Image (cartoon, rainbow, N blue to C red; front, side, top):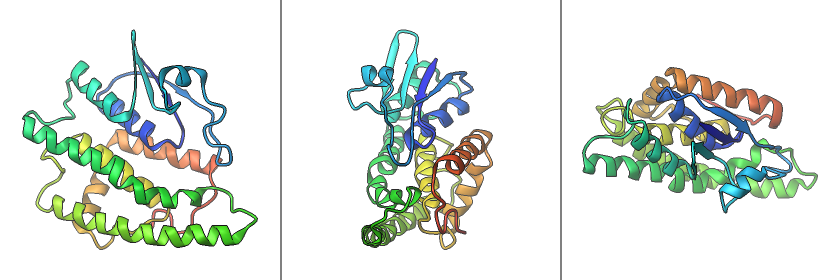
Length: 227
């Protein structure tokens, strides 16, 4: 099994964590990335596999897949133990909704913070304008935290047992904290859940690798991982 991944690709790291959780060995092929040029030049195998030219791309035998959610659903079908999806149709649907919420709803305001790991431009006015939009986005992310905190009240995981919903939401919350976004301090259930997942070996391994990649590739972010 091969995974084409990016050192600072949220969705690649989501798939890597799932592979570790399932105990599946894989060869990781890191594509080129820099904060100034992004994922350039594009890896030819990724361009051939994914019309979007984006990682992650998973190759398992004769099958080549892209899109993190689709990859995780394939892994669940092909390698069902340990399970990362609930058993009943209703529970699986609720789990998928949370995966979608993390990947597509929370990602919208999160994108407004992503400039913070890039070198500051010579035109500081441009940076100031981006920061103004980031502050607005932080308020939106804070409201999402309130909703997530409410969903976690009285339970350890979003879908009863640990699942891809926890994996997807964790990675988005981690990225938010990495980029100096809102603190978890006022959200006790969410903060406890985040701490609990951070201690799982697969999560600890991947987040340590992301921090190491940031030290090599990213500008320091003020307020990153604030309590």
